Picture 1 (cartoon, rainbow, N blue to C red):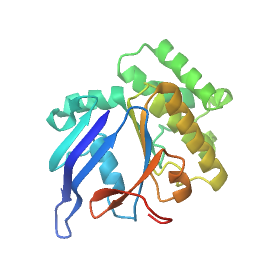
Picture 2 (picture 1 turned 90 degrees about the vertical axis):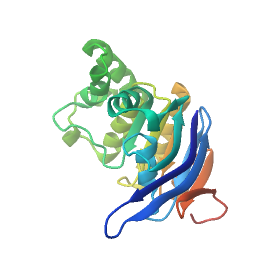
Picture 3 (picture 1 turned 60 degrees about the horizontal axis):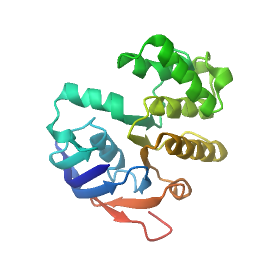
Picture 4 (picture 1 turned 90 degrees about the horizontal axis):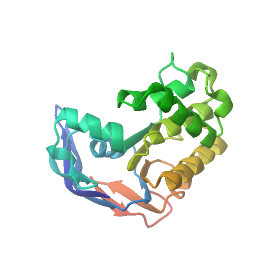
Amino acid sequence: MLQVQKLSKRFRGPQGREVLSGLDLDLAAGEYVAIMGVSGSGKSTLLNVLGGLLRPDAGSVCLEGVELTELDDASLTRLRRRRIGFVFQAFHLLPHLSAAQNIALPLQLDGVPRRQALARAAALLEGVALAERADALPGELSGGELQRVAVARALAHEPALVLADEPTGNLDHGVGLRVLALLREQLGRTGGSGLLVTHSLEAARSADRILVLEQGRLHAWRGETG
């Protein structure tokens, strides 16, 4: 489903350095993988490259047979909108839109009629146990509720790939574990694959397998620390 080969990314400038260095990754359809690593190891950079938000300096990123590095910006935007879902630690919900409207917006931007998009949002909110909060604005929601809305938004278009960047970092322990269980459950329903970036070993253990990003490459996790 996702094949990454010899991926490299360097940040230039006075303190520039190579963050990704000949990185390889294979992600099967329906697989859920956690990536751990110390701060500054390049985990978020990797997700941004895989999601088409950053272009690599070298290497291949192939999603469902489509080579992302060969797409122009407009084509990348369309692919992200239709086949990739993002769950960010900071949520990135629009404050003037309700929970349902935040979920429906990406669908509407892709041409889905408003009524149909809102119906899809309502179904997703029910799936994340927030049906009664559909009309609430982000400022009226708790941290756990915000993250559940963010998960629902990421899954609204049934993407092939969900990229979750520290999705439990702003949540307390119990809520964080519930969000991870919800993400896993919803991926199972849609048949999507997931990549979770986290500092938490407990969170990583919710995945099918754990990889560690070190010195620009991914390695199988073999111990109690990443």
